[in-house]
Length: 174
Image (tube, rainbow, N blue to C red; front, side, top):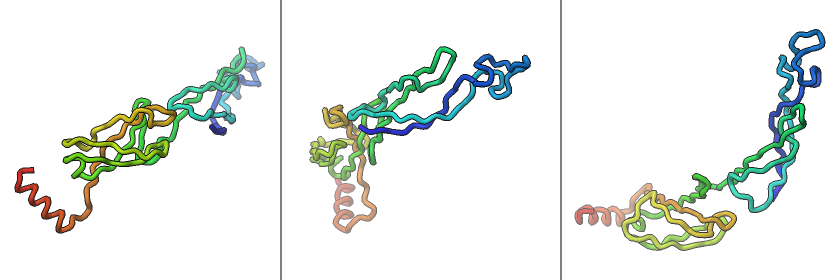
């Protein structure tokens, strides 16, 4: 959890015309342009509880727009930073995991760290593809599921041994 200072624009009753929109001379009120309300800048400190989920709506009572019947509530949508190599999709956390091409094609075990800091291993079956996803129950923030997305590691430079192996694969039809 944390406290966050939020700055935002709001509307308040015009103090000059008391929300009537008309000045004492019968003409539209100058300060509010005849609307009865003025745009103001506000700041509020909001307490964000620990473990709150991405996309959760919070209500701060009495800090919204003001009207003749009082102030409304301010609604805040919480956005949790997914961190490097991660993104939110429809409320689900997706983590990209870099995998050597040989493991994507031939299968094998990969290891990586989850957002919780746990080190996990996942076995990939033969014939996986870049972009494939796997769901890891309970490994996301707050005990939610985590989806991993396979990203192929493409080498910048090949060694002679790797070139030879690729040529052998070519000649075998792969």
